[in-house]
Image 1 (cartoon, rainbow, N blue to C red):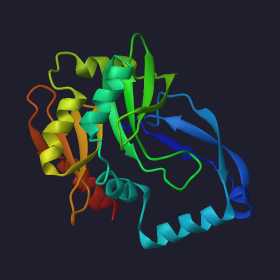
Image 2 (image 1 turned 120 degrees about the horizontal axis):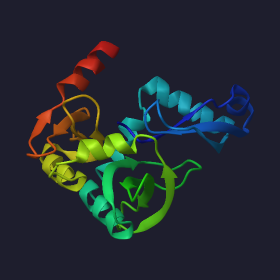
Image 3 (image 1 turned 120 degrees about the vertical axis):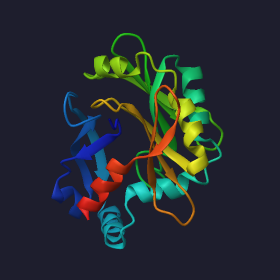
Image 4 (image 1 turned 180 degrees about the vertical axis):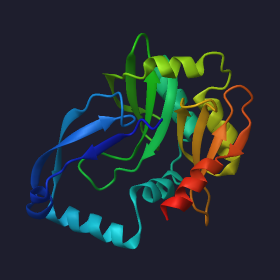
Length: 220
């Protein structure tokens, strides 16, 4: 269950001529969450930079992984800071390297499930752990998340610490699908590709996520 905001439907005219286009921002999985309108300014120069990145194979995930290695605040620290600001249950933490675009500075984005079906998205400064901002939203999969976490003893923060021995943790996210529920953790180590791990919700055992590796191979 990836809770990152996905930007879609930016018109070609905005990419070519520069200007402001209205895009759809969809939070979470492809099902169950209502889209929200968001304004995104895309200039011609920025579009050319994006094209060069695609040619070089330098996608956003790779940029985020590299940048998070220089962050002073770890994923576990960011989760702790978010929960101190907004009490609840941390369900995901993702490092978002936004330097150089219109959305703001790089930050850890931590999703916290509060009371009822209210979610809080808290942005944490990767340099000093201070809260950069937060907002609330509603999600349709709250019941599934609570069910997956029922009886669990390993938190998102503990999962991040458990996987830290594999490399720099770039994201922690709850997988509430199917029978094998757990924490999905991505790490990045110098000279290696990004790796996916599963942290057990009750034992904290870290195992390689072979399912994701297989999917990546099939995509190639």
